[in-house]
Length: 298
Image 1 (cartoon, rainbow, N blue to C red):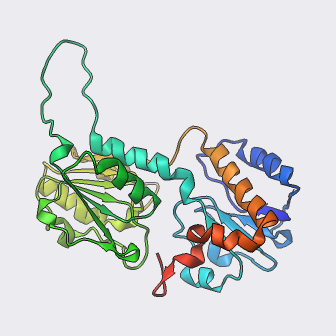
Image 2: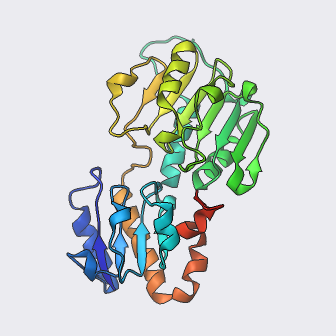
């Protein structure tokens, strides 16, 4: 099979492309300099999917969690599997969310047995929006620790009637589509108590950023942890609030990420080459076409 790498990400090691090529060529694959010669495409969130030339393409591997750049029409029309790699970063993003929820221990340089402002998560009611891989990991991790976990995900048949006024923390684990775009807006935020924490390491456009800023200014006891933003790279100087804590879309970044991406690609390509009969069944939840529900790519 012939392979073409469309784009790499700026956070990846400069030697990533060379390492990827060396590893994938152990499967008797040949790298191509032109997309029109390829049968397998490797994409990422920077790839202009809508204008991809897909004549002769048998497989696309998208080793990323987000797939906002895949138009619904492209996915629906594709006569080949498009496999996404949400499993690659799921644990890393879950750890990021948990670290925001648990809070930083105030390490000290002198003896002082005070811990100002500490509240226990055993008294919290947490709302998780989205029950994909990350949502499930977070739910299973915090259920023994908090008072109550509420879940909203209409596509997974999980949609509790949430008493928003009793929610202490809202954790976003949802994908971005036309039904979830800016779901966190003034109307939603004003349904929450004045002391609430918002954690978003999912997609930036799930939140109306200006509405969140206004809410945090009006409710200084509330807090937001944001790793993703409406526009990236984000201008942090415009988000300089004492109760807003920001990171640069790094929740899924970890030592060994490049190796994990390459190992995922090798596994998918190996299964595609050696067991094509069972491929779609094995990767059912990771194939984008299976994420179309009610004509929406969720």
